[in-house]
Length: 159
Image (cartoon, rainbow, N blue to C red; front, top):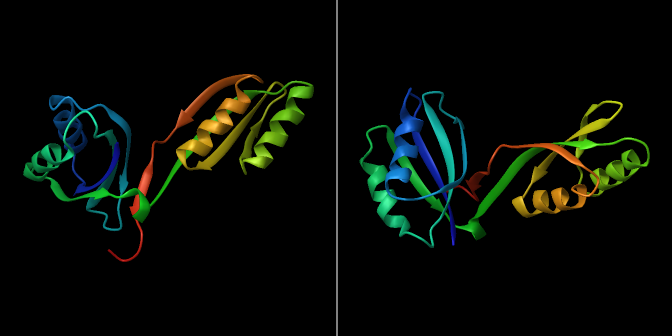
């Protein structure tokens, strides 16, 4: 089972290294990691996705709480979470391929952000399964490059 952790940390050098190192020492593979400034410029929010089936999640959260720069940790429950990911995809788009790419992009509400004679760059935002489905459709056309942000997530409501 995947777990999405929202970790509020002090916005200081080396914090990311210490947090990621803790997961590595415990044998966790981080599947997705996104970090950015939070509503408070002195704090950053890390969204970390890990597979909790291999190791108990409570073990790592207890260790995270011990780190000096960690302010708050939430294990976000999927049904009470809004999550999204950003992906840029460079696709071969010469001749008839261009129309195919444009049609697929429209279906997935992907935005064309760069146009070249031989390629298009798409920007798409959404759930991971949506992004995976788009990639699967574009593979036969010719995916040249993919860049993903990793998942960012926030709990629903005021809590």
